[in-house]
Image 1 (cartoon, each protein chain N blue to C red):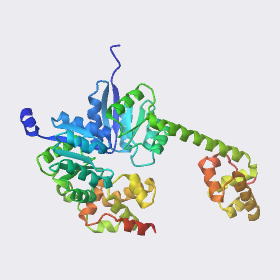
Image 2: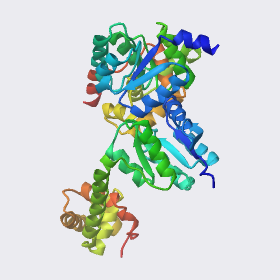
Image 3: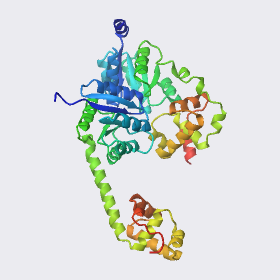
Image 4: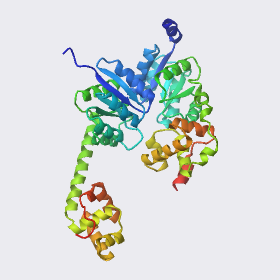
Length: 227
Length: 224
């Protein structure tokens, strides 16, 4: 081998000037080729599908849910590695990007040489996160895991009947409809709900419902009716 | 031909000032490739850079907007004859206000392509405005009859007038007190109703129809 072939890169960003600037920079290094650009999120997915670049540089401010484009790219073109680019370092955007399967996160405030090096690193199969942001990222991810573990532990304390009630709450039922669906008296429903609130250590029915919804609780409790 | 171009631009020296270093460096490369002597600096190093470089044109990133006037003042103190060109996220009437406020020669949006960018800098170097501006950029095909705006709901009208302020989705959503997704839904509905394709055109249509960007007081009222 005389050397690896250049990495093919697609630049997906809403600002044409950013695309032009980064393209000029990448074209100037021998080991990178910009194969296409995209100015909108949906466009980016289509173009990545058709060009199959090694790496796609995706803006974190594309309209739509945060990281939406990234997640879509990961599922539709798994071989292409995603590097999310933000205007300024944002811990939330970084965590969202990593959770959506991005292999790298860079910001516009980095030096161009560092940005280029990050893309190169991702192309070679490594990950890239700005070192100054790594600590907070890990803490964020660990905290999230703890939150989930804690919630799962709390859910385990519920009786089967209380789990049914909580699943209904997560679906948006109030105590009257819980009573109707489970064919119990409203007072019994209320008692169940009070116990759930106590066991989960939350302050309201809404908070219990939100906690259940956040962890996809209703998916695990199919019961909707007696027993 | 290239010789003539270089002669014409020999005395031009552009300084790009932005927090967004990667963008600035890429733009330096674009201009250097077009034979325009260019360098870049961060806002913190602006005064220093102006003392060191013989810059005649300053391309100043106008994000965040409230930092822009003091930065221009700093630049003017170091070099009074400097031509200032503002780089903005979206083309809105708010840009014109900022241009007037700081006495810049004009503004250019991040939606400009490479050619448009290089030409704009070239024009500014000759002391001309960067573009045949909004007047010709949004020809009559965008002129919307007033009734178009009747189709908008009260909230959509607020969102449209907020769009005219410019800035990023997240910022605008925060100002309106809604999620970026909700903002996006409003924006899509506005696009459909006005028959435009992007925020650019929406803001231009609104401006031509005489709509004003929303004020903080109005936003506060809406929230209350």
